[in-house]
Image 1 (cartoon, rainbow, N blue to C red):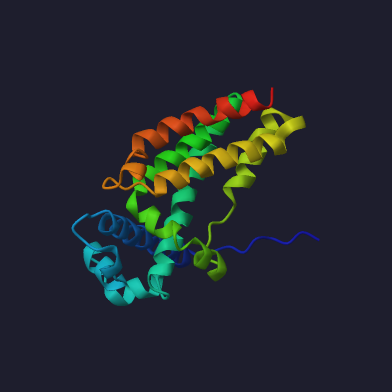
Image 2: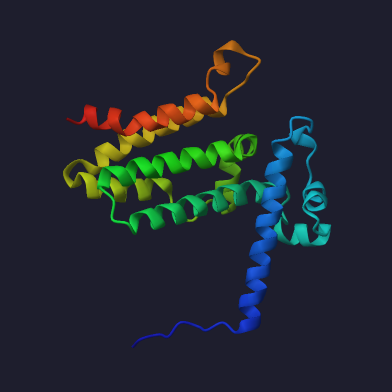
Amino acid sequence: MTVEPLKQDGRTLRAQKTYDEVHKKLINSAVELFNNPLISPEKITVSQVAKHAGVSVATAYNHFPENKLDIYGSLFQLGFKDVADELNAYLASSPKPESAIIMFLNTIANKVVELGNAIRLAWFEVREIQASGKWIQGEPYDVLYSLCKNYDPDNAEQLTDEIFQMFNGATFLWLRYDPTYSVWSKYTDEWYIENVNEIFEKATKIHK
């Protein structure tokens, strides 16, 4: 027996579109506030995010009932959705498997840099975000594995692990960037992008 998908009426679709637009507006507002060096991140509230976005506080709390934890979770969700959309558009052009892997890594890195301090703050709450069920839909590791499988089916798991570890290592160092401390001041946006660009080549050399 085939189950037909439920059809949404026009009002439902319009309501969902409006909700999504307001949600993205609120997230963009949060990113701007978190990246403002004149504002202490600890003092940023859902009410401030709403005011900065030009949205009512009641509406903002409808989107973020658990305060900043919802904001942080949404940063990951929307960020990875943008990455997935870009990757799917790129895959439609039937690129070489290795090009798809490099593009995926670079797209994530560029999105991380774009979100800046906002993603740094969210990352340090990642355990709470995962425990609350507000984590991203679809793990980056799984996407990377499927791309590596197209490139090298016999060594896909090992290659994925190698790339993933290198990427996470570079990301961790970028997360710790601190211009006031010599040890961490070297891990700039430029350093991060450059290192991510080299990951695929380094990983494939290991498995040759």
